[in-house]
Amino acid sequence: MSFSTRILCIGAGYVGGPTMAVIADRCPHVKVTVTDINAPRIAAWNSTDLPIYEPGLDEVVQRARGRNLFFTTDVAAGIREADIIFVSVNTPTKEFGQGAGRAADLQWWEKTARQILANAGRSKIVVEKSTLPVRTAAAMSRILNSNGSGMRFQVLSNPEFLAEGTAVQDLEEPDRVLIGSEETEDGLAARKQLVDIYATWVPRDRIIESNVWSAELSKLTANAFLAQRISSINAMSALCEMTEADVDEVARAIGADSRIGPKFLRSSVGFGGSCFRKDILNLCYIAESYGLTEVAAYWEAVVKMNEWQQTRFVRNMLANMFNTVAGKRIALFGFAFKADTGDTRESPADAVTRALIEEHANVVITDPKALPNARLDLQDVGQLLAFEEDPYKAAEGAHAIAIMTEWAEYRSLDFRRIYDAMEKPAFVFDGRNILNHRALFELGFNVFPIGKMALKHF
Ligand code: NAD
Ligand code: UGA
Image: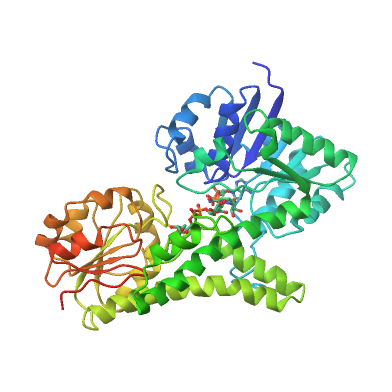
């Protein structure tokens, strides 16, 4: 079969895998190859047991794999063949040297640039899919174009806005696709090639074009604004608990204002996920590097509020369980950073687990999808920890349950059965406000939601 365009994606993770699967599914005329240095990950993409869980992803991969979607570890061959190379490698927070704990660690990014240069053989379009500090495209372009090879590379910024758990839906029907390029003749031509691919299934008015720097900075800004909404409502949740206001009622009232809007106002034990914290800290680092200390401090407060909310949650547990959880079994329902994913990166459940273990609690973790990752994340934590697939077994003999992830199945559990099997007094700390608090209270539980008055029998 002959293809009109050959795309390579370097990095077969949470972004590279689903994004490329949807492009291949929607564009049968385009050959899409996804490559990674992680061989087991590629093997999993080629199997029936995909390396990540996303609703709808299995079907998309099955339709396209072997037709115009391929997964391989041969990065060099992939680079040689491609017309357009997406780079979707990890860009975590730097853990060493200058900017440690804040700046983005660009070592994988830079290695990829050099790999492309070594294997390209001809001019190509390179697309930044990873989230990167603003002006990274300039560095990429310099590495690729200052080598006297005669090849010319156009670097585009096409940040990804998908959320985990809804990745396939977000990719199939995005609110917008953003494509930034140099505003030169070659840059605009490269931009058009990418626009044409997305326009196969995305309405044209949802494809936003901009210069490269706006595209790069828009990604960091979007994540900062989203996280800010959560920290804002979480800040109000603490005040609600003091004043008998109900945070869900407040969220509903303010969300009805069309200027504010109803989404992303769910108060919680805190936001998690691989990106909000890292991207905001990176934004702070960039602002500081331009001498904008007030800008950095403003955004850093969003992260600090999130940390405080997690600490506050544990402090609340402790205070209400007679100031000691030592030797008490506590069941954490959910370990994923949100529902419908097995991803546990930066999950608030991790911080809560560690704080409870420090208090010598016996923590048992249950989760429908995230137990394998939970086990890996908590490898360093000792004997006070157990994992249990079945939430009913997890709750047996527990003094308290804490809801850490908003899995739909937790709403329909038989809480009478759970209550009967627990130590008394039995506590529920609902870190996601998903349960029927009044009904639980009537069963005998002492109930502690977020941002609402507690319902206590004593
Ligand atoms: P990930 O860690 O799941 O995947 C990255 C992959 O890149 C890994 O499998 C790694 O082995 C591979 N890799 C690293 N260096 C490589 C190299 N030189 N050659 C080949 N493969 C290489 O990360 P992710 O969650 O997919 O995130 C990727 C980027 O997308 C990050 O910049 C992130 O901020 C951004 N992003 C993530 C999400 C999300 O929901 N996870 C959403 C939007 C944007
Ligand atoms: C987020 C953004 O929503 C995506 O647009 C972005 O592409 C992605 O980060 C990224 O750059 O990685 P994601 O982290 O997958 O996506 O999931 P979200 O739905 O944003 O949830 C993040 C965290 O906030 C979760 O822990 C979630 O439970 C929490 N959250 C979300 C709340 O506590 N309250 C809310 O109202 C919404």
